[in-house]
Length: 186
Image (cartoon, rainbow, N blue to C red):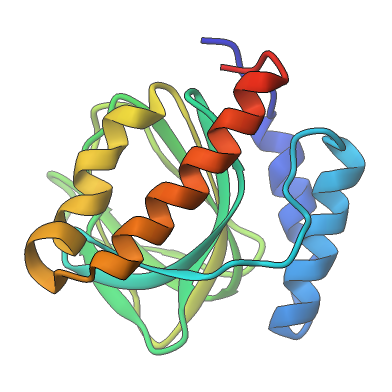
């Protein structure tokens, strides 16, 4: 699968929002992304939705979705923790505000990521993560994105039973993916 986005460029774009008030940070980062990838970033009004996955609860808003990549803002205003999931994709988290604590299988010490840092989760890897008080990030994944959906939606379907949230997530992801396909992007 071909990719459009460069994690190093995304990291630089995410850093443009560090130190700003949160809404200003989201606006600044979105403008930076549109400047680098003008035809591939949804810059319209942010449509936030809850995301329950791996025991963690946060909010997300999609900026790009296709069969092979996504970009979104993710975080929590009150903190959360859970399992990352194990995917056939790579996941990059670029911290904007707050902290994220992580540890991978076999590690006995946590790694702490602060604004400006980048965390990486390789394909077929897993980690525990925690946003201890609050935390917000720009997240990028590349690889077979549909294979992530069962993990990403299981808690919503089987635990919270939030059908409205499930429908909204599928509608927004589906809409952005179809737009990407119409542009010739898998």
